[in-house]
Image 1: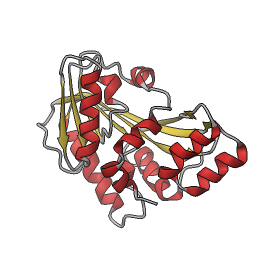
Image 2: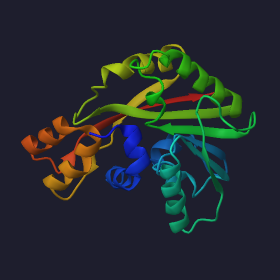
Image 3: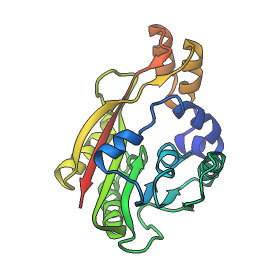
Image 4: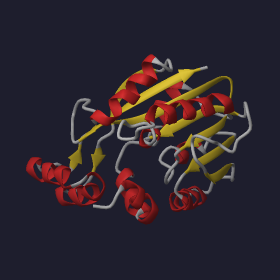
Length: 229
C-alpha cells in the first residue's frame, strides 16, 4: 500500500474524492471563531477541505502544505467555485512558516500536524513545540487556533491511534487547548464504493471491516482542539 506521503503526491484526486464524502465543517469552525473578514491560515491545507469553506468569507486566506500537487488541486477547486481570489498557496514546512509576525487572526489545521507530532517520530515533541511556536508567532493578539485530527476510522466512538495520544494529551495539558469530538462519517452510495474509496488510504483491514458490516456509511470520529490567545 502506498504511504500517505505518496498518496498526497500522486493520488490527490482520489484522496479528494474520499474526503468529499464527509460533512463540511464551516459551522463547526464558526461556533469556535466566526471567520467573516478575518485573515486566515490553513496549515496543511491539502486539497482544500477547510479552505473551500473558509475562502467564501475570509478577508484573506493563506494555504500551506508540504505537497505541491495537493495545493494545485486546492487552487483549481477554489477557482471553480467562482470566488474572488483572496487566497495564496505556499509549499511550506509548518515548523518554519514564511509569514509575517502577528499577521493572522485564525489558524486552522485539519488532519495534518499529527504527521509531525506522532510518537513514531523520535522528535515529535520538538516538532510540536516548533509548530506551536510558529503559530503563536504569526497570530495576532486574541487570535485563535483550531486543530482537527482523527479519533478513529471505522469506529462509532473515539478510539484514537496509540501513536497520536501523547500529542493529543500535550495539546490539552501543555498547550492549553480545549477539546471535543464529533462524527465525520463518510457517506457513499454503495458498500463497494465505500470499500474502494477508503481502502487505498486506510488499508485492507478497514476494507474488510466495511464488507463484513456492509457499510455504505463508514463511521469516523474526529477530535477538535481550539485555543484563543
